[in-house]
Image (cartoon, rainbow, N blue to C red; front, side, top):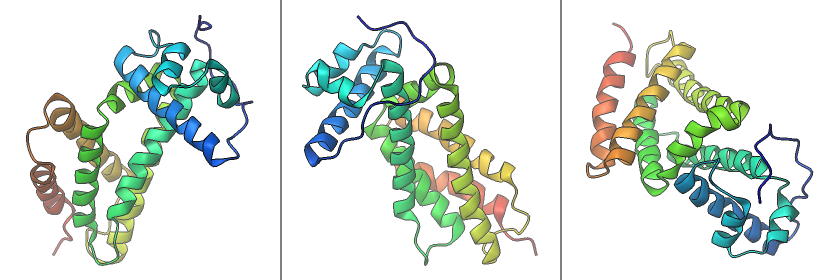
Length: 207
């Protein structure tokens, strides 16, 4: 039976040193996504995670000390995967506004492929508040960096502020909720195009 929920402790589990170990840890993370996404943190269990992963219970404790720890690792993993999707669309020849359109399309696609992300991140606010905050702060920081780069190149208005990045991120989060989680029938490119028109008008350099 899982131990009662407590604040996450510093990790004492060793990191995988072999490819087999990395694959096992990856299976556990993926299984945790399914378990937490379906049942929520409190009803999910370590045994449920290992059953989904097809691993022995002992393998879990090789890499994680608790349900709290694998949950935190999962939030970090999802954040990194979203970051990597956005990084894939950043190209020197693409201007700042078009980059945000492609980044949104990439996020919408990821959310459709991993619908559990919304439940997991929402629960992180209470299960692991630091990971929850880091998830959003790091996403906003990446957007801000892209916007400032565009401002320096003269592609968008020069008075870019942190609030611009948070506003864009907020728009993206709720577009994902509406068009990736609640319904995924509308093409992501179409949603990204509509949102991009808002950004293009709002961020355009002033004459």
